[in-house]
Image (cartoon, rainbow, N blue to C red; front, side, top):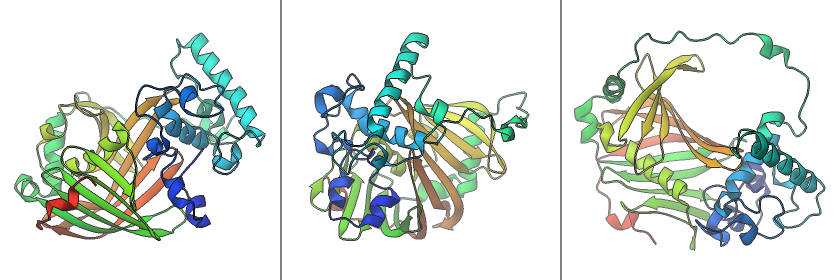
Length: 360
């Protein structure tokens, strides 16, 4: 269960960091020869005994889901980075639990991943049969609006909260200086270049390792120093989506349709929940603050044999740069991994050399 961006690897300072970065964790699982489509896990990886029929491209995501479900790291089931070894006893236990889960879903839910490791474990290595008394308290239900709010009005209010259509549309480029902050407080310098012509580049410096990812207007790419990291479609999409959402006021340039779902709450704020569809991209769920109109969260998900693998982004602490309100604290979360981008400065409407975005 490899987590290339976890605290354990950041603290270890091992010389094998580059190999870990480009192996089975999310944002680079195909770098070890894993195909993007077609092959099964049993055909691609050594010593796979239960998940043999699973698409090989799901392996990294499923391992992260298992880690998060049990609240453990890779070493709970694996010895070092040789994932084929059976020397750790918990690996055989994991196989039995996976077999049970798959059998239940096949027998009772037509093969759909209704039951997962998280159904029982809930972030604990050993599931507890004791009922949590805290959960006996009823959760207050928000009163839903009698008439669904108009999604066009929600989006228009969002654009106005950013600074208005004219200012948002006048934003043509961003140069961002930031820090990537890990859960243990360790940080790495980060720099982003983005343009309204749908091009982006991001540099994160991990000691001597420079990780660069970009979108050249057509395709996404990523590398660590001189080593190319192959991306799967959903990983490429998130790189593209980040720059797509940074510019322009027209929702149709980003999504083909918006559908209102419900009123919900994030922390102490009421939010409108809107499903955003796009025929060319994965659907997403957007959360808009009912008071100030700003976008505070978006969630995309990829279905796996062990349930959805969610990619969540929280937008906080909006400040004005170039006449437009922009989030300065952006929290990213996927199963078993979290990190925060703390923006320090943003320069707007600069001219960039287009070679900056070219795929290496």
